[in-house]
Image (tube, rainbow, N blue to C red):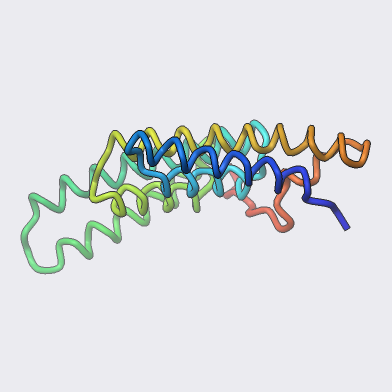
Length: 167
């Protein structure tokens, strides 16, 4: 059984620090945790950082475009049509390797909507969250190595990683 002590300590400490800093600065605390989770769900490491953040940011952009369109289309069922097209686009963009983490795109759109369409604060929190994910992965490996004297690549890998769409 793998030990997750290193990643647990690093995530715990960084989560507490992020919460304190973000609250004091008036940043959107919860959005960073979504990007952080996407980092690990996309496999961690540089790949998890790149694919998680790229997918998150694409989701924000597509959500923003959908919100602009929704404000202009007023016929009955317009929102349902927009959401249908949006969901389709979030999936088919996975043909681009960098955007192949489909859950990250949906998460990006969801957090944009969840912040009441606050584009800048959402993007900032997503970038910070992805960076915190990467930092917690690196620190977690170092802590784990110090604890058990082995290479600790395991704790940054999800137990059942989400398989990105084939590029």
